[in-house]
Length: 120
Length: 110
View (tube, rainbow over the protein chains, first blue to last red):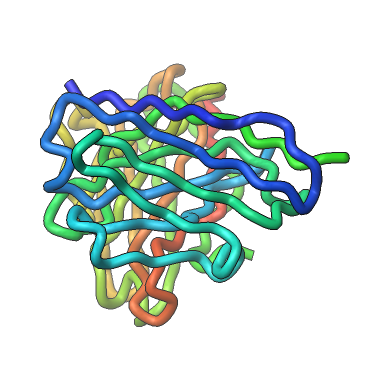
């Protein structure tokens, strides 16, 4: 069974940094692209970033480009999201998501999410 | 403003068939497959339909999807009270190099 467990969320001041982690199990981690999706309170889904299984292909939403960095450690089956220069509008639940496979960008399996609150 | 356009709300009575539309453009739905996600209150979204019309294991066959040109639809037949929740469409956008979503549709079972 696929399990995705996010951690690292919390309250941070504007301009601050946080690193989210996502521990994966139940599948061969290195074979799948991984994605971060966020959802602001009461709002819809927003794709944030994704990384290929090897880590060689990375994409970012324009809203986070230059501030967020996605990475993965295939030896530890863990996905990361380093978030710098945080803004109030980054406040959201951040979900770690496993791709369906084959680079389909189908968001197949979701973690339970971790809440990031950016406020002074 | 979402890249894909969904109606903000939809409704139906138990047993009825309802459809939710998702409109895009040539750079997303026109070139790539569409997925649908169901989000129950207070929980993470769940994949409902992928590759326009395929259901993952465990999704009831009451749920079906279709795509034509730059639009897609989710149909729910035999509507049940537990179907009352939020639904999102999504697709890869070749121009943005990003997954784009619709704004979500809140389905009410009357």
